[in-house]
Image 1 (cartoon, rainbow, N blue to C red):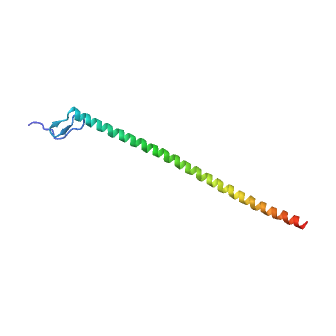
Image 2: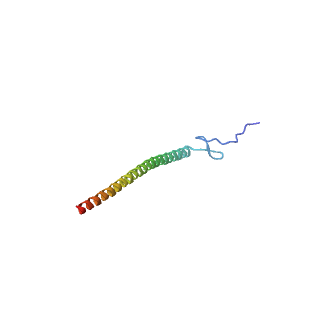
Image 3: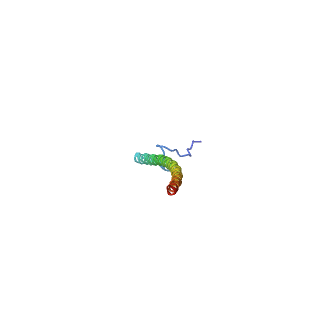
Length: 100
C-alpha cells in the first residue's frame, strides 16, 4: 500500500491550486503580499503608539490645568477675603473722619 499525502503544506512550497505547484512569480506575489501586510501592521502599530503617547500627554495637561484652576480658585478666595477686610477698614476710617 502506498503512502498518500492528505494535508496541504503552507509556506513557499505550498500549492496554489490543488495538484498544481506554485510558480516563482506566484511565490513572489505571496511574499510581497505578506511583506505589505507586515508593513501595514507596523504602520498601524506605530500610529497606535503615537496616539497612546498623545493621549497620555493630553491627560497630563488636563490634570495640570485642573490643579492650576484649583490654585486660582484659592487665590481668588484670599483676594475676596482681603477685599472685604479692606472695605471694612475703609468704612471704619470714614466713620472716624466723620466724627472728628
